[in-house]
Structure formats: C-alpha cells, structure tokens
Length: 488
Image (cartoon, rainbow, N blue to C red; front, side, top):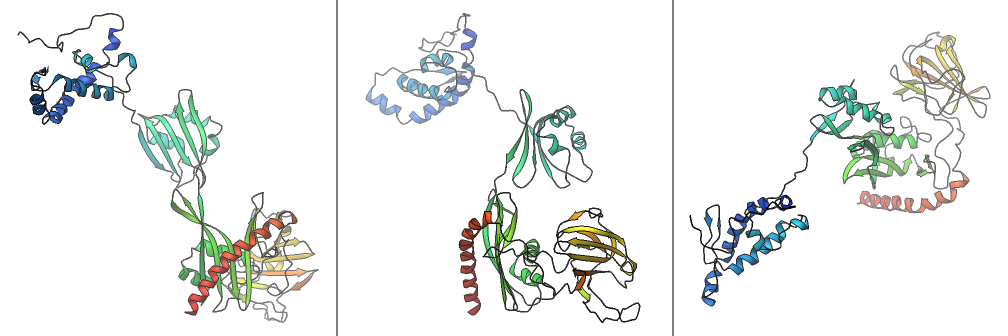
C-alpha cells in the first residue's frame, strides 16, 4: 500500500545507537494517551475548524492515522501541534528530562510510545483483639505471620517490654505482605503507642505520642435520698461520684451524715482524643453543702506529678484517718460502753463500731501506719492492729482473711487493703469491728476529733494560692446560675 507523504513519519525506526533503549522508555505511554487525547482535540476544535477554514482557505491540513483510525483532514496542523505540545508537557512532567520529547512533532515522529508505570505495594491489614491466654506467638501462628519477624521484633529494646505482657481486650494493628511483617501498632495507654516498622536495615521501634485534650465541664447535684441517686439524675458517671465521695470522705459520712437538700457543685475534666470523647478526667474543684456546712476542695499537682486536694487557704481536705475503713451497708452496732453482748448475754462494753458488709469486702487501713499484730485474738477472731503516729492505734477484727501485702512489721498506707470482711471469732454475721485508741484509751471512731493531714508545703503554697482565684471564680459563677435557675 502506498501511503501519502506526510510530515508524520509512520514507519520511522530509531537506529540502535547508544542510548536508544533509554529513549524507548516513554513512547508506549504517550501512544496509549495519544488516541484519546487526539479525540479530545477533535471534539474541542469541531466548532473552530470551519471558521479557520473560512478565514484561511489555504491553510495546510494534515491527516493522521493511528491504528487505522484517521482524523478528519480538516484539522489545521498548527492546531494539532499546539494541543499536542500542551498534552505532552503535562503527560511527561515526571519523566527524566533526557527522555522527554521536546515537541509534538517529536512525539508524532515516533511509532512507539511507552513509559513504565509503578504502583504502590498493597499490604494486608489485620485488626486483632487480644483474648485471654493469647500470646504474640499464638497470634502470629493463628494468622500465618512470620515467626522470624516476631523474633526480630522481640529483640528490640524499645519494643520487648511492651510485647511480653498482653492484656485481654487490647488491640494490635498489623500490616503484612503475604505473612511478612511490614508494620505493628499497639496502644500502650491513653497518651502513647508502640509503632514498629520494617526498613531496609531491619525493624525499628518507636514510642509515639497520642495527644489528648482536657475540656472542663461543670455539674450540679441535689440530694433527696442518696449521693448516688442525685448523681444519676445529674447524669454523672459512677467513677466521678466515687471520686467526689473520696475527696470529702474525711468530713462527710455519705451513709449517715447525708441530709435531704444537701447539694454539690463540681468542676471536672473530660478527656478527648482526635475530637472524640474518651473518658472523664479528674475533679478540678468541688463544693459540698452538708447540713449547713460548706466544704470546698481544689486539686493541685506538684512538680513531681503528685496530686492532692486542699481547701482554698491551703489546708488538706484529708485527715490523718478516715472515719470508716470499709465500704459498708449499715452500722450494725455503735460505740457503747454499756452494751449487752449478743452472744455472751452479759453487759460488756462495745469499744468500737461494727460495720456490716458482705464477706470478702476489702478492709482498708484508716491511716498510714505499721502492722504490729496480725493473727487470732480470742473473741475478735482474725485481727490486724496498726500503730500510727501520735500514739494512736487502730484495730480491725473478725476478718475472713488477711491481705498478703500487710504482713507483720510492714508499713501500710492510708486506704491500702489489709484484710477482708468475715465473721471469725464471736460474731453472728459478716462485719468489721473497728476500734480507735489514743494513748491506749478507746475513743468513738465516729466522733473522735481526727488529726489533720499536712497542709500544702511552703514550696508550692504561693503557686497554689495564685491558682485558687480563677478556679473558684469559675465554680462560683456556675453556682450563681444554678441558684438563679432553682429560684425561678
């Protein structure tokens, strides 16, 4: 077949000169784009061509054939060249300069258009939840992952401590390529995570930060029957209510001292991460109004990260002792020097307070001290006696068992579990018998004046006092709005 002479050299074959293979790396790509792009050119110029032909009847036209598809001969060569120059400059922007055609003429002068296309690798992603009894070895075997990769991960100093202990319910995210590990991710806590990635040099482990945001929130509760009932109405979670009760536990007995009409105001934090609510944070400040008394507490965190609550003038809201060293359902017997013993049926002084509670309920140290007795003591059954400062001792009786961390001569902290409620000795039901002695003399644990805990140290006093005003101002402003709302 005799082809008409054209400015496009259809049968041009570049010679096998040095570098010729390199120049062939792009033509197939442009060929693939060429036909659609030329089609677009035809579409864009369909309305322009008649006008051009009318204005310039002598303009040279070109007919282009590619794979037996011919463009209309009426398209001016200058239009084709201009459009192709534009398309080529876009299509090959990332191709090395030495192989980029300089013009549409050069493109059209080539019979092959090709450029390599590299796609990013696709890895499979696994979201795994740790179950009871799981180990990483079991997880890797269960999901056909490389045990060799696991062994290399376990040798990383930053990763090994975080991988040896798995907690049921935790999640790990693994990316792999046909079983070969690419990355491993595990959240360690609210603010950090372990990230392991495979590089050309091997696996690299880093501890990455997970930023959180603490947002302040205010809430109000009014008591009709109990603290927990009022908190439920206010929409407060159980954890926050327990913290509130813990803050004021030294001044308020939330079983016996509560009165209808008591109320409280709380300024607390809510923790957010990536814009989503995670959990409730700490109580920043609180006010509790009980039977005509107003008690305020403000949180302070020192430079060592230790936090505690203080009154606005810097006194600790804590006492050296708690009133009740057990979470009880009721007081089954009060302090009474003339009580008739329920078993012996004789007048025998009851020199402590009995707190009824289910068997196994934790009994906690009323204050910091040292275990000076642990064992069986006649009608008391299983007993622990603690020696505190100021020549004070406390006794805990009728225990079902002792806590292993409260051995003889061991020091314990206020609130630390020392044993568990039972009915050993002369007891008719499960309860804790608790005694408080000052200089060897029994005092009523419910009414004795408790020694105050240490106030805020002089080192932090100025900083604390400076922080009090804005916190109390925010709390009091909220209080005024609630009082006004109740008045309406």
